Length: 192
Image 1: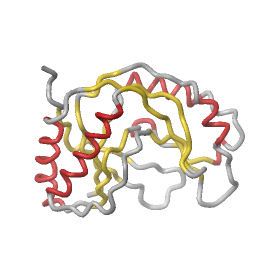
Image 2 (image 1 turned 90 degrees about the vertical axis):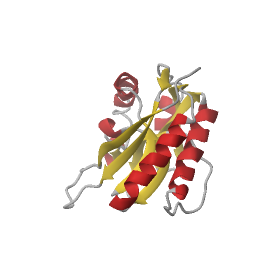
Image 3 (image 1 turned 90 degrees about the horizontal axis):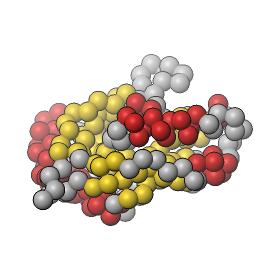
Image 4 (image 1 turned 180 degrees about the vertical axis):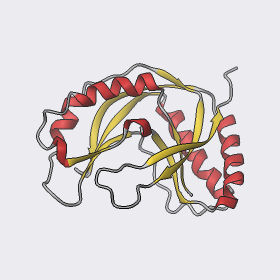
């Protein structure tokens, strides 16, 4: 199964960002972008790709240990930017050093569970909002990033690490999006 470790913003926080994203509909090229599905909005900490079913229990156990070693921390969605002119994202404020630490621990958990993790890259906290299409008109994401630059969402406390299954669309249905299913919700260590 295709898995990643992540943090899922609460519905109220996702709804707040959703209203800000809705205001972008009048910008040029809106319909030419591939927008991420709001029910699946997440902050990826470590992407594992295809994981054999037999490795999931050990990965889950290792992730539970990583979560238990991390105290809850505060975040808020804030600002925006682009990666390579092809991906629009919302940024974060708050305790991003702890989020990066949790990402490093999630990656280490996979290595300790015997999964190949590939090349280590410094975690860049973000929530992906949209991508340009491989074919079709080129869309300048600059105006989108500018429109969201001043966005600051409500603060929330991250209290769990999620192991999530990503189900890719099948059958070539236009506009189909991945579906996400939480395999395990692993609580962070209670403060104190």
